[in-house]
Image (cartoon, rainbow, N blue to C red):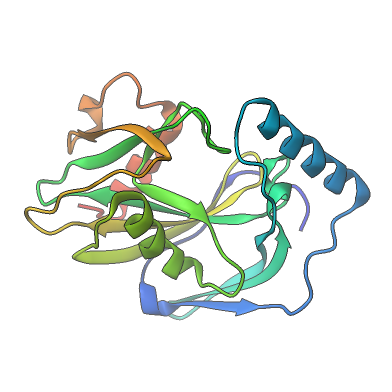
Amino acid sequence: MGVRPGGILARGPWDVESVEARWRDVPYAAQLHEEQAADAAIAGLADRGSPTHDGLGARLASFETVEDRLVLELEPARWALRLGSDALDSISALCAVRDAEGRWLAGRRAAWVASWPGRWALGAGGAVEVGESPATTLSRELEEEWAVQPERLSVEALVRSPNGLVLLVGMAHLPVGAEVERDPEHDAHAWWPADPEQWPHEADAPLRLMAAMLESRGGR
């Protein structure tokens, strides 16, 4: 895969159990200029006080939809490759969260984090670990970032962002009375109204587009 336009690659919904991850044994072989871009990005994190540890993450090598299943072929890849201007199909999970009243959980990313510093994001999200299914990443990140477990969790879409980062997008519904506790990667959070038209000004266009996609799949 090279650089491809952003957009929806596949649409669900799928049950978590219907998402299959097949891992290649051989890691992605980055080209020299890709490694250099990753090195520069890591150095940039140090300049603004972010942790600069690197390691292996996941890259989407290919995918297919088979009947009611989504099959992902993944390969280990240097985590920092995702930080360049072309994320090279590195894959992360994004789990939007709604409470029993239909409100959306939004969190502002702390200034020190590597991705989206100072910006608001929906729910939980993070990189897929080597050997992990991205569907498992959804619930893991929800627990790590907000200390909560969903009443219902579905996988809604596979999306490629304009910068080449692939997202497995899920939707978590919380039970009545559930309370979240944010992690240090967020410095503020809020429950935005069920109707995105009533969202505050900090809800930027990509967040509204994501909500519109989820709403179109019956994400209430």
